[in-house]
Length: 221
Image (cartoon, rainbow, N blue to C red; front, side, top):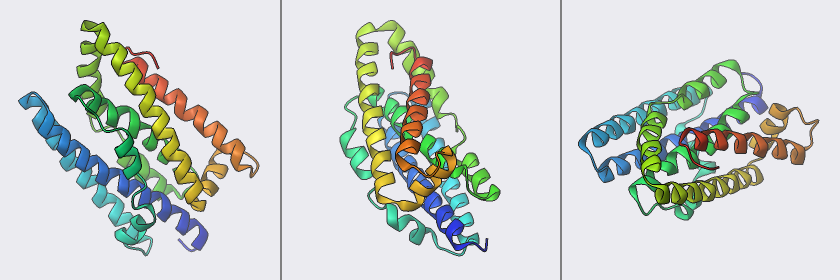
């Protein structure tokens, strides 16, 4: 890649993506420890290992672009820490919903800003963000639980609304702090160079995807 601006944009998305995968590993490993059943512990442990494999893919592409993984990740250090602190789960069901809903919003954001990137990087982002089976585990576990327990369903619906609000706030902070992401968003949304319009469209897209996730669980968005 010979265009320094395009290269910088690609490295910005890859740096953020690397943070999401590292967070995914830590979260899945913690979920495996907290899981109430052996089959869930095994499945979540496998998913944690897969997250590290995906991080290696990101590392390889960062190297191809002439940078290093730590250098690419550096500007995003702490970017997701506040989100985790604000959405600390208190139950197993809340823990499952965190990754599915909260980080689902961040994943959707990564897909959007990856749209204008070079095909190789864009395809890698899509590959890394492909469902690893976690969504199916969450739907299988929580949809049934909500059907059997109306109180639980109401509590999870409320938790889901908090998660999406906090996640959208995290996305807003990422856009405010990282010009490369703002640039890519404007390109992706085709908003004539107006960041405010692009962000409004983005939030509409992210909210719609959140609603679809909640509906899969039989919960009110």
